[in-house]
Length: 117
Image (cartoon, rainbow, N blue to C red; front, side, top):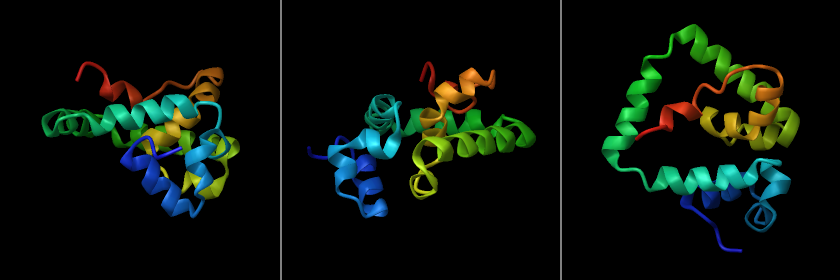
């Protein structure tokens, strides 16, 4: 399998694991298809759309931002391990841990910022 996106290729290189390209579920957990689709979506956003998302993120209260980031990281490490988690952004960790966040009645914070761009 070739890389599905530039981000997918970059993460594979950071992990030093070429099979992250051929067996993404092993490295990104059960939500890997959503993550791969997110990377495609994100890479196709215009510069203007990306700046809108950053602007929305800036409106999240710092305490809420930090709490959401920590929750996503804490739960994603359970799914994919620390090595993979450390290669990912808070957006990506939230996707990986989305099912656990939802089961824990914790809201998705970062992914909704991409809605209606």
